[in-house]
Length: 120
Picture (cartoon, one colour):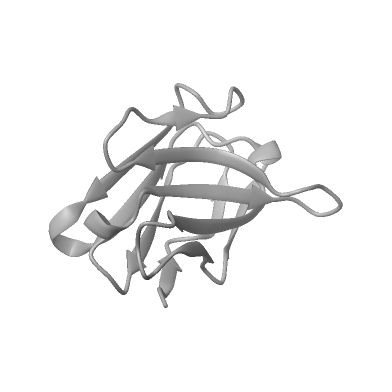
């Protein structure tokens, strides 16, 4: 099993910045893809950004150029730097880790979520 613990959410004014952190209980070298998703009230969960272990990053069109996903392998942690925040970015943000079938840890893992609220 893999545990993911998020931190860094909160309340910020429009135009401000926040950095979310997601600490994994295993080496992130063993995780194929880590990502951040978000879910606003009444809406489906959507991908915000993803970072594969051996590929390029991927961003939702709505956040490209404002958000940056990165990883610190030594700390087994993935970050989401969010700049120029907008009220429409308000949501619960979830960390995700996907491990493919070649691993005994195969599965799709989720953190508990962290609330981000952007006021206008």
